[in-house]
Image (cartoon, rainbow, N blue to C red; front, top):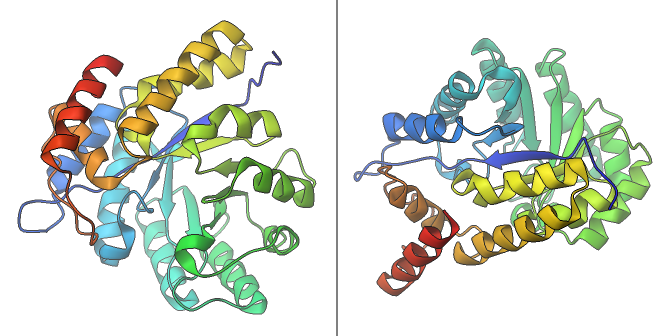
Length: 292
């Protein structure tokens, strides 16, 4: 197989809460420290996996600061996306004051943003980042703001350093890559189950929620892609797919249960989702023991 020496793995990390629902900063930092022992290419903080819509701006800044301390500023992507340009710019400026070196910004959400509003949004966030790289983040299924491949090419013209695309198939991702027409622009997929496919299609790698709690299989996939080792890739990909299946494709309750199984007080969810069932927990315990 063809080697892909630039294939990257970025983990989308969770936020941990105490029993009363407050952010457990100590447990969150402990989770980051545990993950930082692994040679990841970066971490995406305060995104969907981090339950960002349930966090205050100060909480988002605090967990991103903790990540930057654990992983270093150049491996930490501070997510500053917000429902409005005003909020995103304010958060970006506050993150700059905290020493942020890299940013990601989800499109505005809830209200479907118009094309002109999207262009103004990213122009303002890029300006607020004051020369630091900003990555656009598309997730139409969660934001109600669709972005066509042609529109993404225009958004990149605002100064974006790269893009993360979630909730889209590898076939759709290929359409975005074709419209962008720049093989040097890093484009990431949120489909951790399709790591091999998206890199083969020309993407830079994946931003993976499952790898934040089970990094080993995904690091093995990345390393096999980089070296072009077909035999190693087949074995690593099979393990990564088992990790995705065991966590129900990155279900937040399952991810936090894996952290508990790895010795961390993961706590519950703020997001309005069901906790893991006893049967699912037993199945997950068995799967994690096998994977580790």
